[in-house]
Length: 474
Image 1 (tube, rainbow, N blue to C red):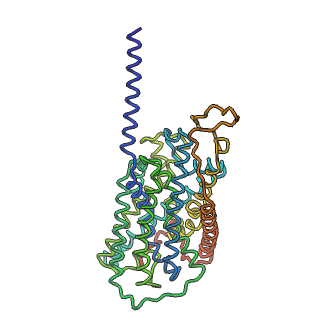
Image 2: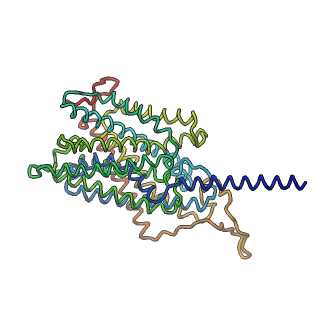
Image 3: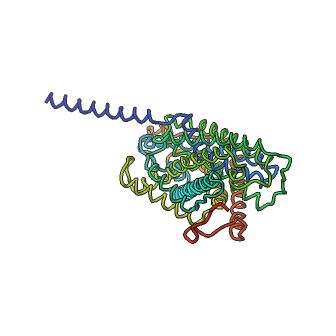
């Protein structure tokens, strides 16, 4: 009997040690404040470097002001998302222990119910899937332009074939696990984008600004540019997914502010200098507006590397959500391979169907990104702050909510760890203003982007499977 008891205790101790060992490994692999900031920079910065200069030109002289406003608001709403997830982790202990593959939709569900959850999931999937498609289009276009210039404008490569090659390279990389498993991609993406911005600025400084022309902006161009700027800061869809992998999720707002300020600085560097130096000679992709030479080649290569890494980062929350839905374990399996390969093949089909990145970029910025960046975070934060106990929240109650014994003078039971957030009136007014700005700006941007697509002003061309020579340099 003693032997059996001893063996049982030994097994129990062994299980405890194993659990502690697993927890220690997870903590060691978790992201810190700096790593998290790098992930955010790496996921959103590159596409913005290419498109922001044209957006500022289309906005006119107030372009930099619009850019700064969107950057500051995006940083603030990012901190709201971080506070939402911290609130849920405090209220629902199971979220600290379970693998949460869809934290943003989980926030939406606890704040607004199933409708909010499904709407958020749809917006996130469309945003990230569309963003990855934009990145793939940009990679293929940059490679085509680079080969064309290096060959003395003699060798031409179809954008359509390069799209297929790009996706074939990205698919195996996408089989990696969660953000903490491919932090190297984030470091590469962030560093290459910042270096590219510096080289873009250096190239622009060699131009002659005396010949620059600035046309008066039109409302259609302004609101389409507004959508582009929103897209450039559209990282909110991945914020909670990265926060889940943090060692100290409560510190996520610090990471967001650091990252967004860095991104804003980079955008101002290339955007303002591009506006002042090139003006109306700007192109939707600034690489195409730079004078041919070693600097433009370096910029092209750096941005291309960034975009490939960013594509892997932004598709991860989408594939994690699909894997969570089908119950695919968090390890390398055939299920993961099939899901992630399928997502990239679908992205390839969209890219072959609409081989112009600026169309997708403006539409996403004015629609789903306006929702996930500007509208949803303030709404969810406000709704969660109004919940005073588990009965006010949507979904099942916490698995271990720590209910106290009823007070002698009251039958009300109060949860021990139910975090309550008090929002001052001036903050509520600010949240309402951000939501209103997101609605008005998003609707206007989407309308003018669709109008440009319908009227042909967007230079839309036929899909690749109709004409495989699409995108060849002329």
